[in-house]
Amino acid sequence: MNTVEMVNPPQEIKFNIFSKLPVKTLGRFKCVCKEWLNIISDPYFQRLHLERSKKNPQLFLLDQANDADEDEDENRRPQLVQLSAMNMEGELSYIARGFMIGYIHMIPSGHGLVCLINQGVFYIFHPSIKRSIRLPEVQSSAFQGVHAGFGYIQSRNEYKLVHLFDADQTHLCYKIKCEIITLTDGGNGRIAFDSWRQIEDECPFIVSGRGVFAYNRFYWIIWEACHPTEEVSIISLDLETETFESIPHPNYTSYLEDNNISLVELEGQLCLIDTFAYPPVTDIWVLTDPVNKIWVKQHRIDLTALEGFDDELTEITVHGCKNGELIISSQQESLDYYNLSGQFFRKGKNLNLQADTGICLYIDNFF
Amino acid sequence: MAIMYALKSSDNEIFEVEQKVIEQSETIKKMIEDGAATGEIPLQVSSKTLAKVLEWCKQRQHKTVENENDDNKGKRKKERDEDDDIKEWENKFSDELKADKDVLFDLLLASNYLDLPALLSFLCQLVADMVAGKMPEEIRRMFNIENDFTPEEEKAITAEHGWAFQP
Image 1: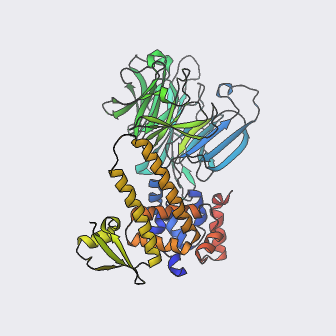
Image 2: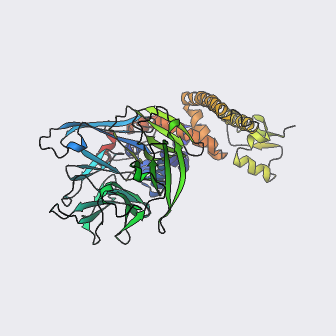
């Protein structure tokens, strides 16, 4: 076989090979020749690459010496911060280190971008190309902590970042307003954004933690001190109507026994992860009908089967799903994988995770 | 008695193969179904490459037959052992191809022509692993590709993708 044929295999073979490569390599390959530049820039190819990347989420880890609880301390000094990007097997793409003042909050989008928040400033980080942008200033808030949500709308190829803030500065009562910013693909790794826009509706409750995006809505768990009733513990923001609505949580949750619940989006559906201290099990409820608000319990995981399980474990975090396995962190140095159909755990590679390592999944992607 | 077919390579070598093995190729399966496969089946593939194709197909066929004969008892452990065996076989297969890139690329074309999706995907992954992280100049040398950018164009496109060249 001669060299000319070797250089020019059919287009679909090139598509196939290129679709298996990381975005960073493809950035380099765009500089090889005009033909490769055209193939990699082709929207059809980029969709193919995205579909493959989605099946193969990457890990983005944030290690920092700062403590979230000390964020309000006046005498803060710069502390070491480390960001690392790797695949699920722990093969590193890169590590970036630097010194930062104040705690960094991290919000995954469930797609390519990650939101980082430091001292009230919002940054968008693109792990595939190791680039970040600073967003316009947000409204200041009377309450502590960060109450935001970040999500990707596939049909529009854009991200929405929402920020909840307390507009009442008296500290006597609260008035929770919401502002939204839209991020779009500016081409070649650049991120374009509009300005923060406040919506009319107010959020009736103080929320806890970050918002989770599914069904074109953000969902938050309501802060436990301000539950309206025993049945309601979740609030949603519909991006279509821009209105807030409270949602009953599933029956039989452990919530009132002070156990651990969290929300996560798994394969496009909103799931409530409910971990009981005794018996040590985690229930996974799925909001199968977001309009009529119907929860269905789809899995019960026996935590005693988890390698390294002890009675102290009352908190596990579900980060996502890959090939029918849940990706779980349970305060250990490695991640665990739970096979949903076979109902067994598999231990991942040791990633030297610390108790406070921020973990998020991202999809290797051009935007 | 297994049904045998005779495949003829582009350099006129004849390979006698069981129908079950060669039917993994959608192209040949269709020829057989259409009744077009009488006597020798001529293929636009060299004998060296065809031997490799058949090596792959026989390994895959072997695996399928074993799985059909399994009972459920101890299946998970057995599957794991089998996975290890297949991994080992695939590693050896890959190493041979990596050492002879002409055969690798010829095999890539053949798997596309014969419509063997599993082999095609395996080979594309192999090539992807070989080129991942390489610099444009290394790639041009490796594949004998001409740099058709003008110096100005190259400078601009490289600057635009500066993020991709960071360590």
